[in-house]
Length: 322
Image (cartoon, rainbow, N blue to C red):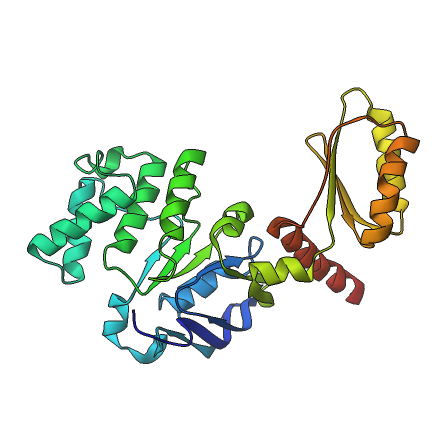
């Protein structure tokens, strides 16, 4: 892979659709060889940014480069250096899986034994070897998603853009494909948009979070967790204590040391603002409200915790300003 300071870079990238400001002066640098997570709620501008990066749309202002080449330069050689997997890839249903990959490989200039070898390689990587002779029209959603990744890998891209690459896969399939993506680290730069934050946390070296078209933060995952290192206390009450648990939750929400308190699926999660005070008082509150627990643990905030906190603070700031 060609050495470069940034595999993907943009400066002031802005895009409007009518009165809607889809992307608002986005500036971002993605180092070569990393797996980069691109996060944001629905309507944040993720798909717009991907379309601008890959030349499927043009910005109203600002610029973007891939592998050091300006996307708007018209340099046709750039298209051989990156690949893009759309969230919902479309295929010729009458083609067989192998035929499609051979067709795409030929478009990239692969021929003969080299083409056949590369097709075999990506079929094996994505777990499609047995289904390669089947017509794509009969593929399941998960198989189509795997085929999309195989197609995107056929040219051994320097930069790989993935939009929700594991959205149609079952847990086993998601695990397998995330392993394939993780294996690209150091050989390709992967720019990966996903709603499944646990997947991003598992494979990504760094992330950017955008909301309403604006960049909120760009950082390595470790630095982000260190910056928002307030611990999360998690406990699972024994069944049959609903009234006591609700009184406890109300008391936790009144505690000056507690931030967000959330109850989901029988588990209570407490974000601590003051670590020392939380550590000394939370067990006392459990005892004072006579709540028996099956499980109690203290952990670092997950990427999802940080995402919800940052996006939530954006909404809060906007409401306050209004």
